[in-house]
Structures are given as structure tokens and as C-alpha cells.
Length: 164
Image 1 (cartoon, helix red, strand yellow):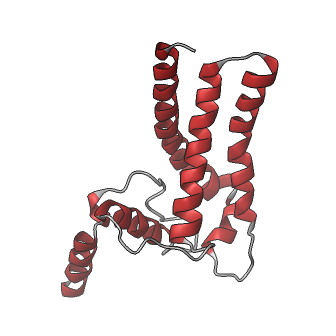
Image 2 (cartoon, rainbow, N blue to C red; image 1 turned 45 degrees about the vertical axis):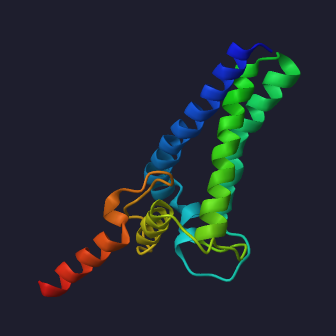
């Protein structure tokens, strides 16, 4: 493989990873909190199960990556499709570490030192889970955490509500 192909593949991996944030946001907002709430509801309720119906989404989201890896290696070799599959895989890995391990503590590990951005992402996710219904939720993404979820902005928001 020449260096141009390698560079293009690297850019495809990064672009796919970033695009998958939009796919996750859209799916989370309109499908998980819509027609497939029957699965996602298990994620918004307190339980003591190791698995929940919501975990089926991990299986569903892995299928495009698996399909691309299979097609691009077994049927017709295509490094660009492998790069797309790898970008989706990387997003899934990020989701697993951030969402299932760091935020929801399915494996008990949390970094002791957190950047402000990581803390904003965690805060945004906790705001999302402050609702136990499919309506009126916010913060459907995982990579993008607006500044309104910064600790100082959340405290400011609380103090404004207390004075009203």
C-alpha cells in the first residue's frame, strides 16, 4: 500500500468516527427515544441486571462494521471500506469505554484525573438520564458536550433556579 492510500484511509477512519457521532445522536434521539423505546427504556430505569434490553443496540451498531470488514476482506479487497469499518469500530470502542465503563460503571473504573471536557461529557450524560421517560430529554450525543454542561454553568443554572 502506498503512502497516499494510507493517508486517505487514516482520514476516512477519522471522518467515519466523527460522522458516527451524528448517527448515534440521530438514532438516540429519534429511534431509541421513539419507536425502539421498548429496548432503550431499560437503560433509563434503575435495575440490578448485568445486561439490559438496551444492549441490543450495541449488537445492531456493530453490524455495519462487521459487514464492511467481511466484504472488504473476504469478497473484494478494498482498503477504503476497511477504513470505514475501522472508524465505526473505533466509535463503538469509544462508546464502550466512555458510556459503559466511565459513566455507568459497568466495570468499576473511572479516571482520577478528568479533563474539563470529559467532565462536561459525563455531566451531559447525567442530565440525559435525569429523565426516566422518552420525552423531554436532552444531550443525545456522546462526543459533543456543549459548554452549558460545564460544572460552573450547571451550578449557575441551579443558583438561578433557586432565586426565582
